[in-house]
Image (tube, rainbow, N blue to C red; front, side, top):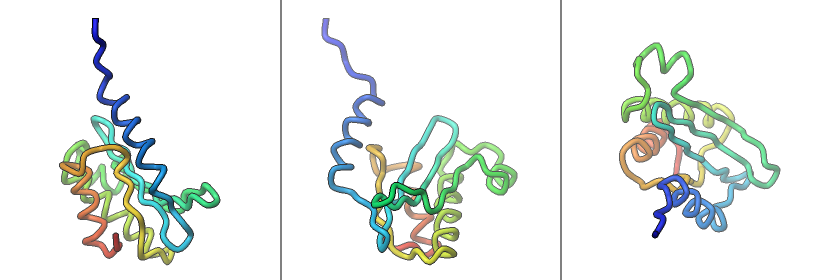
Length: 122
């Protein structure tokens, strides 16, 4: 019997392959995206020291109180705006976008567009 790998295993394989090339530096850190069924998370990471500089998620009060349900594209855009505002406040203007092995579509795309809209360059 042929076993088909689950979509998360395939995503992790893609993410591992992409991470060989995508690397965050102090001048241009990595904007990492993780999405679950009900929430979305974003982190700006400096890979040279392995430190998270800025993070935002749809679990935070300001987003959850505004939207209610946070597993949709609207919440993803708000998370993108929030992470961009926090990054700009820390002096980070340019980032490398790491979509985490996900297809650039739907919530991942909305998060990226929200971050660009708020002023991040990538």
